[in-house]
Length: 332
Image 1 (cartoon, one colour):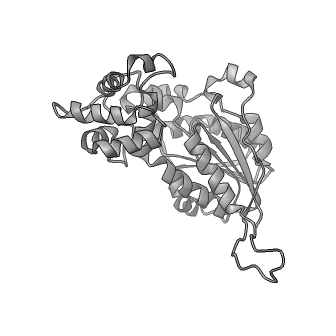
Image 2 (cartoon, one colour; image 1 turned 135 degrees about the vertical axis):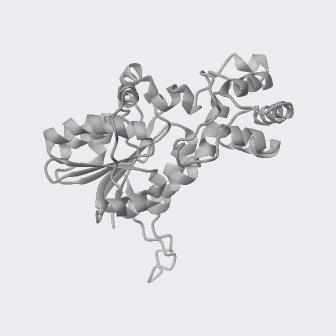
């Protein structure tokens, strides 16, 4: 059901933390092709950086649906969008949930179809910066990494304390391209034999011990890749992403646009593959009287190559450095 959020001093403080600069904002607004009275879905609402600008383009009769699984993000977005929607007269509906459940959420919203949808992937800065969420390798806290602690049960601590060395190696290697994945996994298994690994600080120490000193001098924080891999596994991010993309494409009205901002190669590959699959054209030989391959494209890819941030944007907003934007249009 639509989100109702109680005010508190903690929520007020977190609301301020969610005021980050939206990535590739101008490019998103241009390529989403928004019109008055459109129905727009922000499937990764966050602090509503993109949506507060979208609201200005929807006008009276327009509907902005914001989705996020983080209650604090919804609180920040509600505050930001309340003034934007009043000024521009569009209706705003906030739903708590994960874009992997987009079918159920849009049924709940009771809309027949949508005209544009945005996915801004990755973890928001406030989630990373709050030590109690257990995402950060820079702050010591309980090893958690759940995007939605109220509904998810499996934590990163459970993974590192129960999975085999082979399973940990696969996760760290496949989800981060960590060169030392096998060695890190082995060090984790050896350490937990003496006592459970419970905090981010403990895991960081293990990773540092596993990676040779010479390899730790370059490439940023040595724990960055392993933490990314565990976060992806804990939250099932790639499976959820593909499910959300497929659902979004089904719900788009003809001529509607889908825009996805990704921040690492695994996400970008998943988006590229989903767009390619849904835009696949007939492969039958030219002489065939009827199509027998079954290809019936639903999408037209607008961006053959991803749109990248300018150097000027990166200078102002370092978070944009690894961002890639891909856009497609529904054709049937």
